[in-house]
Image 1 (cartoon, rainbow, N blue to C red):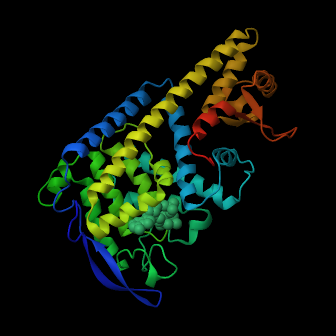
Image 2 (tube, rainbow, N blue to C red; image 1 turned 180 degrees about the vertical axis):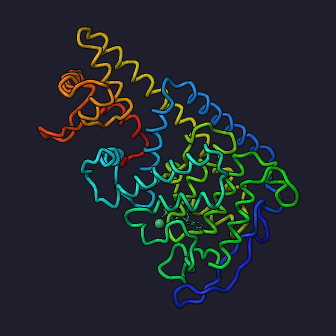
Image 3 (cartoon, rainbow, N blue to C red; image 1 turned 60 degrees about the vertical axis):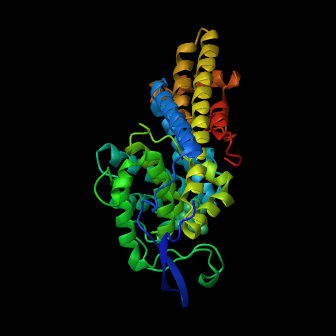
Length: 395
Ligand SMILES: Nc1ncnc2c1ncn2[C@@H]1O[C@H](COP(=O)(O)OP(=O)(O)OP(=O)(O)O)[C@@H](O)[C@H]1O
Ligand SMILES: [Mg+2]
């Protein structure tokens, strides 16, 4: 649906150029979202897929393990949108304090993303509301080390930014002037937290959490409150809203891969909301992404469970030394990339025992040594990483 205006234009200055900045009206859209027919069907399908993901995640033998792996996969994918070139194994190597194959800044950025998400989730679990303060705290983590550290971590911007183009004058889009950011973000915060109260928030409270997350994402990107990291934080916000709104007990749905695969369309739809007031086209795109992504995550979870069962059976079939080998395999499931020292410590066995058990896994083709060194060897559970890597090309 086309709407007349979804915000107002105001004069601002970026660098030394005069620009027309855009200040979005508070959510929800007016007139309200059109939710009939096909859109309702999309919403139902996305909701069903999300419910399936939530229930399978609860039924997994080890939900924490899936969460650990999935969060890291998301961190890699989401950081790739920004251009960081690290892979999942680079991140895991870095977490092991080993040298990854990519520049420090790249892998640090991915690691920051994990830290931001973990911080946000920990606070939500403590009962802290999903508010601007929390978003700023997450931004501190996101920008803590590497390239972002000079981008005012944890602070809303104090200068005029612009998106696309080579200079402010030919920008694709100029977000609100800095002195309007606080008010825009306060309005977004009350929309996110609204639960059917008076006034404008009424429709907000009535909206299903998926639609609220869809609307809030665009609004966040339009406000572009930080100097950098708005894309990554905006994508994290979706997962957190779904969790806080009760749609997912674990933050397991991430649209980064979907946005990455349809990047041109994603940007275009953000523009269309602002220029034409077409929230509906965005919502459709978003809901399709949720359905696809949730289905994909369910498949991934199933395949991991199958893999673990198969490999356990293979080790058991070997008889003899299998108790220690199973222990090491179990540890590899927790951390698909591990050093012998770490493996021994978490499996509660000595270094030589871990070493012998690992050799058995290597002979069976389950594990592989990564470094080619004689000392400080690192082993990887290839099939596990391969399943996680699927769909993310350069992962
Ligand atoms: N035309 C547009 N209108 C509104 N928002 C846009 C537009 N184009 C891009 N964006 C948003 O801006 C984000 C990029 O902003 P920023 O560089 O601050 O974030 P990032 O996390 O560093 O980058 P990225 O999203 O590329 O990883 C995009 O992810 C997208 O959400
Ligand atoms: Mg950026």
